[in-house]
Image (tube, rainbow, N blue to C red; front, side, top):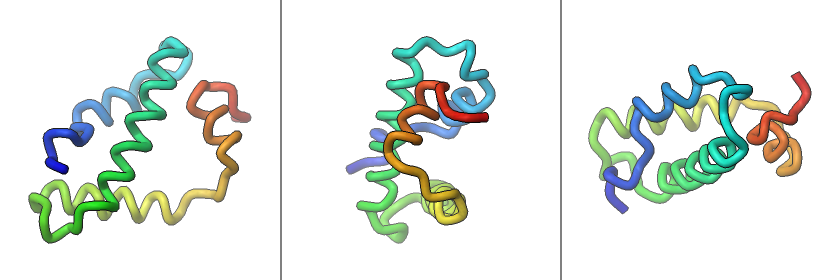
Length: 86
């Protein structure tokens, strides 16, 4: 897998700053799918085979994920669709 198939930092920032209410259901589902795929790729390729920037971003992402609450897949799906509890 190459870094070309990874979600770019600009895309990630854009997704975070855009309010969920402004996104269509299709956009929310697409983000959920691409986030899951990006995290899978993050964990498949060893950090020493990535650029220094990608390795640092992946390490930060893993650290963030390790500190999140354990949520069921249903809760994650609801959050992705903007239907989770706030």
